[in-house]
Length: 285
Image 1 (cartoon, rainbow, N blue to C red):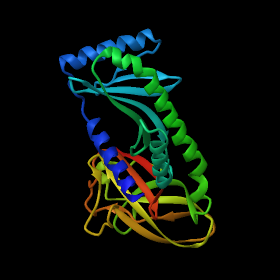
Image 2 (cartoon, rainbow, N blue to C red):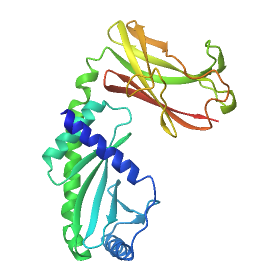
Image 3 (spheres, rainbow, N blue to C red):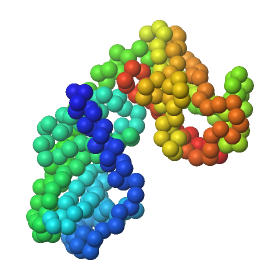
Image 4 (cartoon, helix red, strand yellow):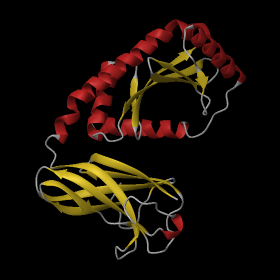
């Protein structure tokens, strides 16, 4: 299981890096893309070229896209958007991906940071060859999605029902090192005032106890870490919780110099053990 998880994570990173930049197509690839675009129009779809030069279309409200590379033969990746996993149990999502990969042999489920996509990869010598197998590949992607979703829906509550607590909501404040509030919870945070970003969490506690919550603090440059950061995380807090719904405060992340955080979008991810229990996005102005 661990090896398969690592493979999925590597595939996720490769996919993310590939989509970070628009790509130029060769004349042969452009001709192939143009032919496929015309074919999709004739079949009743409404294809478009997106900002990374992939061909996109929708079927029954579901997003699909076609990536083209190589020349002789043309290399094709036909994708379908799968599940949103922004607030999901990541272990169950990984298991669902593995299940889909084993059940539908010709597809692969690829897990990103907030969603799972599915793909069929193939080489085509001609546009006619692609058209001939298009609907078969489309059907395989849909079968892969069904296998993925059925497994996830059947297992997503297996761990949360027995978890000692569940994360209901999150808010953040900008504070000084001693905890004095600069920008309160639920108000705007301004870059020139930023010091420590301090989360406040609301949790439903099923079983009283002392638990460790680990936090990943993401900036536009990736996860922020320091010399005391635990492996794979920005920081962690050990919190004693009582049964019922309660607010708890985690440590702030930053430093004592005003203007520590730049304007932009940020994201926090919260983990109990190896399971992501929630996330929160916010903006610094």
